[in-house]
Image 1 (cartoon, one colour):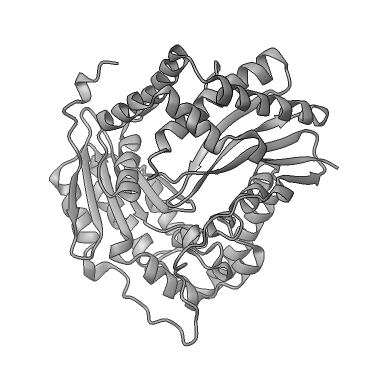
Image 2: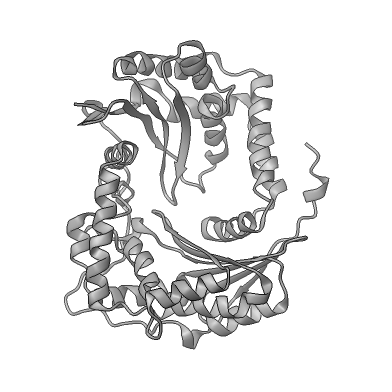
Length: 429
């Protein structure tokens, strides 16, 4: 792959603001828009059990109005500026992003800052949103893949907080009060927990606007903890235990037609030295159309329409899984085929040609991710969040090229060992 274009890739401008927030600025040549995002360095994994779903709930609440604007006024103003707004919560982070034309930049950034830093968090609005989020929890429970994945993760991670659902439970969500939310908002939106990223058609004005709107004085004042309240920080995390020999099978039943499956195990964090070879193994087994599981399960045997593998890497632990769906009568045969493909990779290894093909796929995905203002925004923010620095594309490509056939077999044996897999099935009653 010719990487001459990227050998001299310019990193984003990185500044530590007086509040403790990190500001990242990345011009994108030829861009006609500006993307701005605010990331919180902690997600649902940092929550204690009794506050499960807190980060996700606050993600909702900032859209419900500020101390000076109603939720409808916020929505109407964003729409009047043509702003694309998005937000999401994961186990590791919470993010809020906007995309705007340069001529509407100032009012858009002012709106974003008002929404994030000065939410109303009114008791009546909290009660209304509790109903909405409980509906979301019920919808997830009613979605076969979501229900299965939550159960699969809970069994894989054991007592580790990564095994808890991002949405929380109806019980935990119903326990949120306006006072608690104001206190926790002040903690989560403190300067040291913020990464602010800008990418696209940039002028110095964009940076100055962020400095102005997210100045230390604009951030929420830290609230004193309630008397006798438990700290929201998770503290030292327990080690993920993984399924024991007696708990390597999990079955759920619902009024559905197909059977959904997840077949996997504990794996690595995104800072682990095995992260690249694990990603390669996952791709070899169930990435592209030529992957081993896709060819064996779908193309040769017709056992399933959907089958793929993925790796989910968190800050201290992760998992790998083969997932998809099939007719209930085919699950046992499909499981046998998956285990057989894993054994084949561990026992017979991989050819240099197959390894080169999968290296090319991963490298292409990385280079494709350079294209577009939104992709650049996410890239610089995720690098800061996960690694505390910018990772040039050439460094990632060099890491991929350094993975040898022995590394692939070693990681397959460590994380895809057939006899240590958890098999989770969600099938019809």
